[in-house]
Structures are given as structure tokens and as C-alpha cells.
Image 1 (cartoon, rainbow, N blue to C red):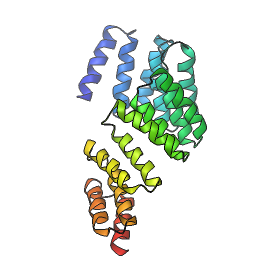
Image 2 (spheres, rainbow, N blue to C red):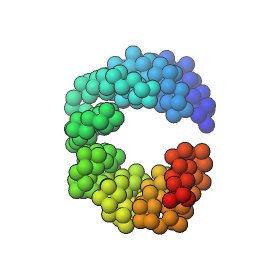
Image 3 (cartoon, one colour):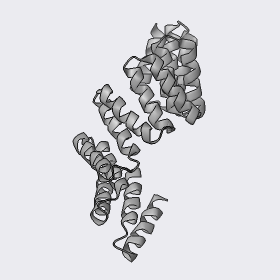
Length: 238
């Protein structure tokens, strides 16, 4: 399917070498298959043909982010924002928030997530990201408030349920934490970190049987996961 898509964009480019959107879309396909170098070339070609095409800068920044070049990612997203100040730059703001989160500069992350939300105030992803930052800042009340807003926007947000579970776990509100982690895996059974978190809670509650069941579910999905294996051994020997 990906190969067919690439062939289609190649034909579009052959027909019209100035079709900047075809280069951009081809770059997205290449990005999806993790061919980051070729994706980078496509986004750069898009920008060469259409220097004011904001989305290409957002996409190019994602390539830099994935190859761990944070400085270039930051510069590229800042360029996207500066190009058309009146445009919706929420994606670039959100991505910059992610960069500052990675750097553990949580105040800056809050600033940029809030800028993204100002432009799209009902975007569940941006709200989820902001809520998780408040959790990391130990502002659990604010974290819960924002994460509940994210769920109001998208009740099936598996990472939002997960992050809400982390808030409740940090507060030692274990029953609510388990309910949130269960909601996360109900939305996506392959989000196995939720099983790990539940296993830790059950072990904390000295319910070794249920802890073992939870971590075994995680290992069924990821049998080679060292962290999961170590927790299972801890459950079995405690």
C-alpha cells in the first residue's frame, strides 16, 4: 500500500515537477515508513518550491525531532510560526511544547501547550499534553482538571486515560487509578504500559495474584520487555 502511494506521488511529480503538495505527501509516506532521510529531502523540496507552505516546515521539524536533532526541530517549528503569524500554528506550538517537555523545562512546555490550546481549545491531544505536564509539576488538581477536559473532547483518548491514571496513582488514589488504566486498555488493548502500572498498584496493595495477572497480560503483548520481566520476578519473589 505504501509502495503504491509512493508510485502515485512519483507519477504526479513526473507530470508536474512543481507540484509541491505531491512532494509533501510523498514525504509524509516516507516519514510513516521511517525513511527519515528521504522524507527530509521531500519536505525540503516542498519548501524550495513553496517557501510559505507552513505545513512543510511542521513536517520537516518532525523529521529533525525523530532523528534527535532538537535544535533544528526547534528552529524549523519557530520558522513555521513566524511565516504567517495570523495562521493556526497550533501543531508547531504543540511540538515545541513536546521539545521542552523532553528537556524537562516544564514551565516552557506549559507556555507552548497553552498557545496551541488557545488556537484549538477543544483539541484533546493538546489538552492531554498540558495535563500531563501539570502532573509532572505535581499540580495534581490542575492535571486532573485539564485531563478531564481532554476526555470531554475525546472520550476514547487512551493516553489521556493513562495519564489520568498516573495522576491518581501519584495521589495514591489507587481505585481511581486502576479504573483509568482499565479504560486505557479497553480503548486499546495493546497499550500495555497500563497493565504494568496496574501491576505495580496491586503489588503495592499486596494483591500479588492480581499483580501477576496484570503483568502477565503485558508480557503476552511484549514478551521481550525487560521492565515487565523484572516486575514479574519482583511479584513472584516478594
